[in-house]
Figure 1 (tube, rainbow, N blue to C red):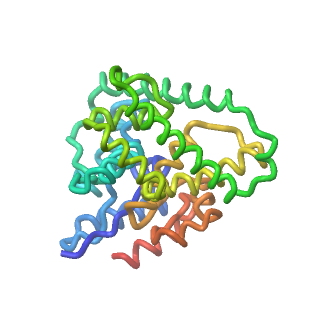
Figure 2 (figure 1 turned 60 degrees about the vertical axis):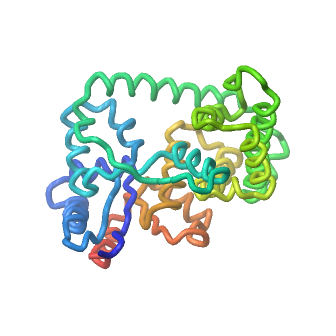
Figure 3 (figure 1 turned 90 degrees about the vertical axis):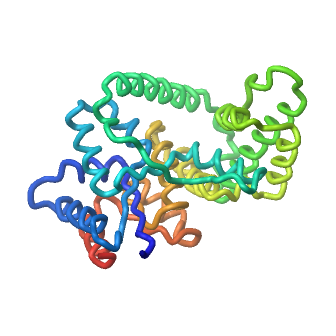
Length: 302
């Protein structure tokens, strides 16, 4: 059996496909995707992005059900993990070579009908968005940033991110008690500690950071590439910060690292184009506005 062509559908694309208008391009795209997945040769698959579960939570049960039903028809229950989960897994793999770092998994059916879980997810999601917004509201722009190119921004951001993890690991090794105390990159350290990070592994991970291996983990690399252009727009064009922009960027970094095609919103697709992601990834990127081009590409796969 041939390896199926993997397509990442963001929330915009998922909404168009779960609720296509009669005789529309998205109705045609939906049919092509379902037929491609159900083909005996399994020519394509559209794994369920775990963020879709979160972003669909505010919808009523009927709408969530339509989204789940659609993804079941093009994935069979396969889901693609979040940026956080994948980066954590491949960070662990740097210090434990035999660790199984997987980008995909299987989701249990029926998530769309769990009302209590949906309410809890909405509350958590809104809290996280508020925290992200508060973080950006506190951001103080350095005057030197006004003259920085996207490449300069990326180099600076890479140093900052690697520096945070390095200092966190230094702090971890130096602590004899309360290993779970506050860190700069709390989510990553919490994940590593839950997986039993040892002092010797922390020191080894510092060496991987020093030799640029951690920043080269694909989801990390593409997040830094796209973030540099997003921050360029934020600084030079006074783009208004929206937490969803950051989530869309993380989604794109996952797609560019682990899938063959990404169908996303117009701004994220444009970010990929301006960042020349095609130089680093074979992933084909389409905006939801390019329905005709998407149909042509899918017909070639089928």
